Amino acid sequence: MKEKISTLLSQVEAFNASSLEELEAFRIKYLSKKGLIPALFDDFRTVAPEIRKEMGQLLNALKNTAQERIVALRENMEVATQETKSDKDLTLPSMASLGTRHPLSIVRSEIIDIFARIGFTISEGPEIEDDFHNFTALNFPEEHPARDMQDTFFIEKNPDLALRTHTSSVQVRVMEKNQPPIRTISPGRVFRNEAISARAHCIFHQVEGLYVDTNVSFADLKQTLFYFAKELFGEHTQIRFRPSYFPFTEPSAEMDVSCNICGGSGCNICKYTGWVEILGCGMVDPAVLEACHINSEKYTGFAFGMGIERITMLKYQINDLRLFFENDVRFLRQFKSAF
Ligand code: DAH
Image (tube, rainbow, N blue to C red; front, side):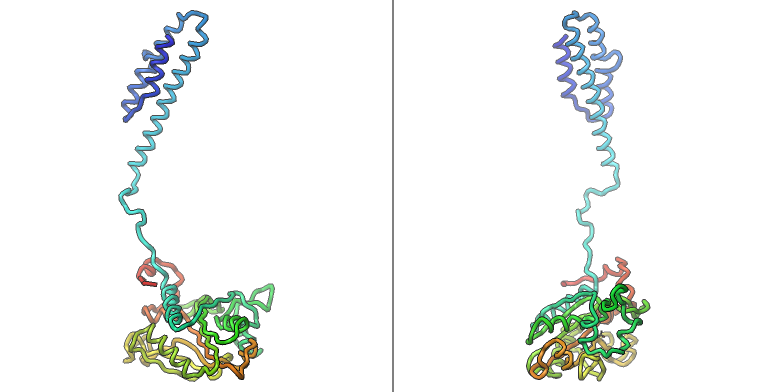
């Protein structure tokens, strides 16, 4: 009997089924009422008492092994059928579609690249800024409207702190830490308490530029920005400067580029003027240099600041600023770039 049990045990252990039918045939052969294992239980009745205990244990073990084998094989088969039934297409490449870079990131990288080629470094500053770096050091008079609650998001618990309203605050931080020559650009997010519309948003992006050295003149400013405009919008781009006012530059100007859509002949993007404004700029006010411990007798500098959204809208003819923040993939998918 012992031999019979061990033969059956090795058969059971070696058994494998490739279909539910085979599994059922196995169950019938070994475990059904007239199967091989119950037959051994019948024989067991006549076993000599001295080996009964041992035989009983072996028989039970055989029966359990056979039952467990059936359960295990059935489970394997169910998992396998679920996998083949699933609607996953296993022949698809593992990365079904590659994402694209956000248009604002593309243009930011392009701007950085253009200035890096003429020796500008990149610097960054905090988005939560104190009054000194955002306003006072930049020569904003105490009663300047930009300090007003209308424009600035203040931090409730500390009236000295606010979300920076422009990246010009980074100029101050760079000049505090470094003596000229300084040649740097500062890309970053800025915040203003504006109602959201097609033309305005409470969060947007700017790039600030700063160049301080001996003998820096307005001619250097013009030539640098002319180079920039041609690199960004194309070789035939023209620029023009209009007098303006910023507390931190003197003289100050706004720079227009010839409309890259109509080439200057007039369209609704340039409101039929042939020109579109892209940035503010000027010679760094000596008071700003002094506030940052730079000798204004010895050094002069120029600065400029531009909005990345505005430039991206012009470059790609996008007419609603809100599209940048909605993350609709149908919009984002259209932008392909080397950057
Ligand atoms: N900070 C200005 C703004 O947010 C932009 C600007 C104008 C920056 C003139 C400059 C500048 O550095 O010289 O509107």
